[in-house]
Length: 204
Picture 1 (cartoon, helix red, strand yellow):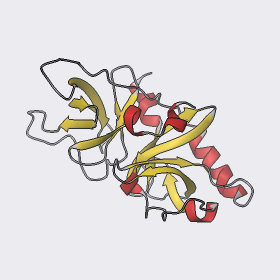
Picture 2: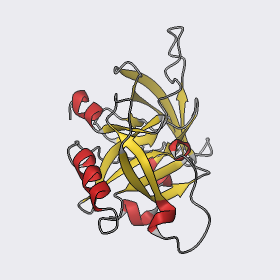
Picture 3: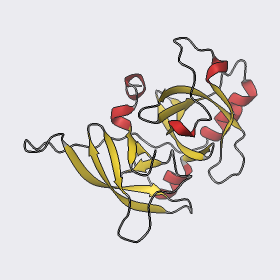
Picture 4: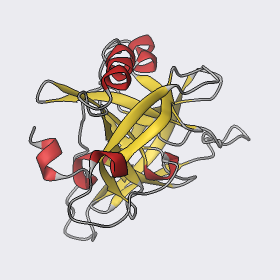
């Protein structure tokens, strides 16, 4: 997949970003948990009203975020969230707006990172190259470290400037094959998709 398709998979989520994925023929948006206006309350059975965020999504470079979304999953420790369509019965027009925005985008496949197992090093870890979309719309190379707990970015690329900036939260971290392997959450520590998304989502 070309980098322009990677860019088109990204949407605006509040003051940050998210990106479109597909699981079991359904479209979702993955983002950083702190891009949500607030976390849902803790309760075993929440109604759609408790999980729905009005006017949260929009086109990547648009000023407005007119599209509603429902929270399908959030992990405040990993700072990771999965967004779904609003209820298409009670919120038919909002669900149609979701479908128009999210359904028109390419999807990013979810990838994993193979950790290097060295009996002299624990925990197992590896270092790889990946890509991040800057605020000015350019894909920039970055170096990642990965272990079983998460990803981290070697942020200063020796060019006198940082790779990450405020407003990039929720961006996909993309490997050379075009797979989303992580989500930008902070200046350093990042959500590791293959290890921090729920099993029901990854198996879908």
